[in-house]
Structures are given as C-alpha cells and as structure tokens.
Length: 491
Length: 55
Image 1 (tube, one colour):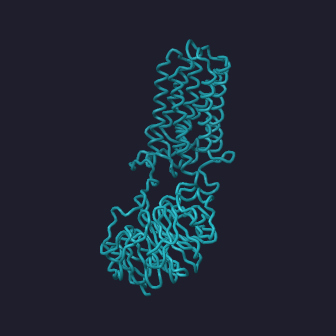
Image 2 (cartoon, each protein chain N blue to C red):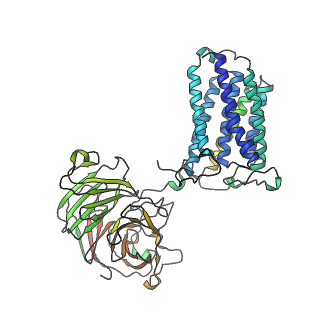
C-alpha cells in the first residue's frame, strides 16, 4: 500500500476511535445522559484513548517498532480488561447487564469489540506496510492527521472534565458503582474505596477447591450438633467387586434388588449381595459436557440410572437389550454394549451455585432428584436442591434448619449445619437422609418442612462416599470400599 | 487518578501538536499513562484478577 494511503487509513482509524467510542462516551453518554463510567470502564476508556494517541504518535513520528509494540500491548491489555469486565455479567440472566445498553450490548461488551478491531486493524496495516516505510523520515502530518489530533485534544479535554467531576484528583480514583454524572459539584462523589485493604486473588470466589476428604474432622463429638445419639454400625464388610478406582456413591433399586455403584467415571450395577457386577461401563467424562468426577448416583427406574459429577453435570444411562455399540463408542471408554447414553447435561442451581456436590438422591414419590452441597473455602452453605425429574430443572432450593421439636441443638452459637460435608444421600418416607464425612454424622431432613428432624453420630465411618437405603437398613459405602450397614433411624 | 491519566494523554497530544522535537518526552509520558492504566485496573480488580468464569 502506498505510504500516503497508509497514513490516511491510520488517521481515519484514529479519528473514528476518537469520535465514536471516546467522544460519544464523554459528550453524549456522559454530559448529555449523565452516565458515569465505573472504574473498570474508565480504564478501558483510557486504553482506547492511549491506542488513539499512539496512532497520532505514529502519524507524527513514523511507525517505529516501539510505538507499534506499545500499541499491540495496550490493545492486548484492553482485550483482557474487556473480558474481565464481561466475565462479571455475561453469565447472568437475559438482559441483566450493567449500566447503559447500546444497540443490544452493554458498554463493556463494546469495549471487547473495539479492542479486537484495533488488533485486527494494526495487523492489517502492518501487513500492507512496505518495509521501506518503517525506516526513514515520516512525511509531514496530513490535514486529516492534524484534524484527528485536534479532535483528540478536544475529546481528551472532555474526558479530563468528566474524570475530575466523577473520580476527583489523585489519590481519588474511579468507583465500582459511580453516581450519575453532574456538572454540579454538590453531586460529585470522590472516593478512596478502591484503596481499601482487600485480599489479592487470581480468581476470587471462583477459586473454590475441588471437594475431597483431606483435612475433614471425623469425630462426631466435635461436630456442629451437640449430644447426638449414636447409631451403631450393625455390620461392616468390604466390597469384593472388580471395580476400577475408589467408590464415589451408592444407590439401591428395590424392584430388581440391585445396587448401583459409581467410581470416578465408572458405573457398576451389582447384585443385591454385592458379590457380582452385572453390568458396567466407564463413561468418557471429557466427551461433550465435562462430567468431571462422579460423586452421585441414583436409579431413576429399574433400567435407568443417573450419575452426577461433583460439578453438577450428569449423564443418564439406560439399560437396553441391544445397545448401539457403534454409537456408544463416543460416550464410553469401555463396555460399549452395557448401556445407551440418553442424556448428558448440567444441573443448574441458584443458592448452591459456586459449590460442588458429592451426593445424588432420587425420590420416586415426588419424582424429584436431590443434591446437597459441600462447603469450600469461598462458600460455606449446606444447600439442598431439588430437580423435577421431568425436565431436570431446579424446582426448590433451601438450607435446612433444625426442627425445634427434634430436640437438636448446635454445639455453640457459632456452629451451624453449614459445617457438614455431605457425601451421600438417599430418600425414603419423605425424608432425605444425608451422611456427612465431616463429623461422621447422619441427618434426616423432612422434605416438606425443610427441617432437620433427626441426627445421629456414626462413629468409625471411613470416608463415607455414598448412601443407599434397602428396607430398613442404610448402606454407607466408604471411599476405600468398606460398606457399613446401620439401621434406619425410626425404621 | 483517571483525571491524572487523561491529563498525561492531553500533554502528550500537545507535545505532538506543538513540540515535535520532544519525541522522547512524549513517549515517556505515554508509557507512564499506560502503566497508570494497568495499575488502576489491577487495583480495581485485585480481589479477582482474572475473569470470573469457568476455565
């Protein structure tokens, strides 16, 4: 491309960037509509202004490598800023953005697009630039370039005015939730809130660790509930099934007298005596939706099972007489003729969001599935989520409270049910039974009143991973393959 | 602080318009402006520096 044409294109790009996003933001959105940028918007606006300024520097002094390099770095940082900002709002419900919406998208979304265009334009101009243009004395600034510079000065002056009114002189800086812009000093709010001490983190509340047993206290006497009655283990045995990996959950189907056992990604159906595997497969967790590591299992009916990962993603498998082995190759890592995969999706939660689960229970009476959260370092809440079987959509969600009539009490004012670490659950008689690996405690939650109506200590449990009910017995499978059988409370 | 940053940019633009020979000073001010922008954004997002989404 000819050098003068190249500079014309660059001047037009600078002019467009200066007038549309920068000028429009300050003069139209700011001075006319009273919009005040949040602190992140301010920095994205500054990034755009710097890119335009580097364009002017190149128009004046030529395309030196350090100018081009700086422009690329600022555009890359701008893209990151835009993505960081979009990440705060992009996953919310329809239309739930932040601040002003322009042509169907909020300002931070436009920032991503603008920085992306800047990167593309820089690449295109570099591609079209002749090597001889990179060296030598740059030409005198064209009228279009001078116009761009003049407009830039005016727009930047406008930004100086708005920045002074909205954010104040140093050390004041932009705010997370700024007040509406006004030329009246009485309405100016200058804040130092961003300078207040706060923990530095890469991912904030998203830095939740994967669930596990490490560090869990197991002594029921030190748990959040005081003076729990003891539920003695009536029988304990070791699984003798040929399974790969450690057990992660257990379920029972009375109609066929079979157990369902899961491992990290294995699904095993065993006979009622737990001595023989009748059917099994290993699911490919990374195909399509990431299932993670299975932590919950349930019979949906005598031929349909569901396995849920810690991340609340799930797969539904159906036993069929003639599974399509060729089709199943994509879903399973082995045993392609054991099941058909019918569905793979995710359970969406609200209160249980940002927490993993390690349990799954199915209530055929209410035709509902239940999960119970495990706390993490970022979020500590015991939340029971109910999903209707028909559409596997969240239908109810709550944190259970102690039933006053149960006589249960916390061990102190600072203790709560949120300390429990539920790793297995099952439903019977309108109650959700949940076993907590922390403090080896079994709780019974009335599914109508949402209250904990009973709780027992079960000393000696070894990393309980799953809970199933068979008649009046509760089967608790340990991660290491032990099976502890206790009588159902009140059963 | 944003006020200061736009003042820096304004000064750089003025140098481009009026003092072409002050190229090195303009570039240094430009770099200062970039660093200030990066620092302010990092301060504002220090409790979660990366986008809050699944990776």
